[in-house]
Amino acid sequence: MAANSEVSPDGAITGPPEPARKNFMDRFIDSIEWVAAFFVGVVALNTFTAVFMRKFFAVTIPDYYNFGQFLLGILIFWGIAATSYRGTHITVDLVWANASPRYQRWIDIFATLVLLFVVSVQTYTLVDKVIDTRNSHIVTMDLGVPVWPFFLVSWIGDVSAVLLIAIRTYRLIFHPEDIHDAKIKTAE
Image (cartoon, rainbow, N blue to C red; front, side):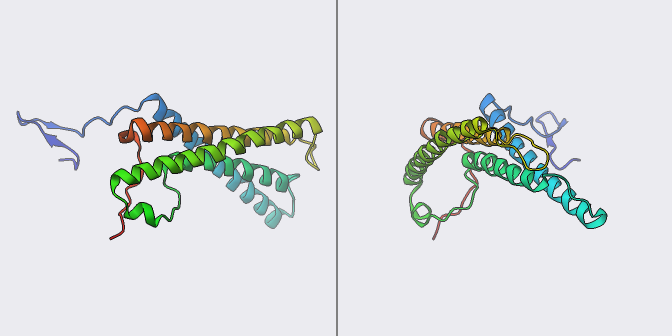
């Protein structure tokens, strides 16, 4: 018998229950996390390829360092988007850990509103950087690739962070049961 099988009242063996269907918001959140994971892979592949080619073939890939910098910037902003919603990033909060569940929720709402404000201001200021970089016609040194698309993808990651933080804020206030935070043991 399978580990997750169950026996119904009439004696029939059934498989595990169907997983809960995800709504649109959960699929949207998951897709942003997959984009962030994709950029982790791209940064790792860029670094591995550059080191491999340099070590074994004494060949340097043109603009690999610039691409690495820009891809790392993209990764950082999409990573902010991925970690902002889940609440699984590193935190040290002695007040929250010692508060009752009701006050923990209020602290979470306040902290998420502050985060939403900060990341929204950051997103607003970064759009100016994207426009300025595009208007300046800045290109990479070796291949002459325009830099602004990298900045644009980074900014889209930041916009995604704002959206996810807004979704988290809405769910914390109106649907706290929809938040899938890691369970943290409170201080004793």
